[in-house]
Length: 159
Image 1: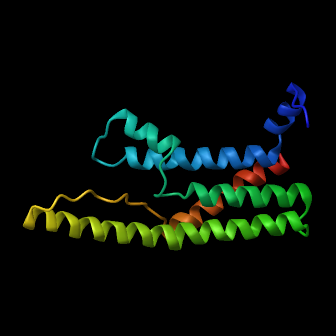
Image 2: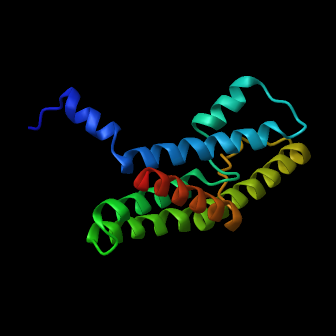
């Protein structure tokens, strides 16, 4: 069993691949929070903190930024013709496809189901418990996330 020391943990936290992934996720979540804060509707502070730390969906896509940063940083560190880079690109395509396709479709279906459920509740007095609405991403949200992730990884890789 491998023993983790301060030195080995320090290497992880100073690794450009790790830093690229974490910073791309955090920066995109921060941008997303700022965009929502600029809207005219004011929300409680805990709502903005939940967006910053946890919530998905919206502009830009933190999922896409993170996988883009991972692939870019691994490409620079390990080489763009390595199996690891190809594997991370494949993983990235799955994440992006899920964000744009499956999660977005699921969210739209959940919204439609909730609308029908509330209408039935109002019309017939049926007790309806809404399903969770997952927000996926539009193509532009994913594209901006990919671009942000690429440039953050580029900065960590060559600076």
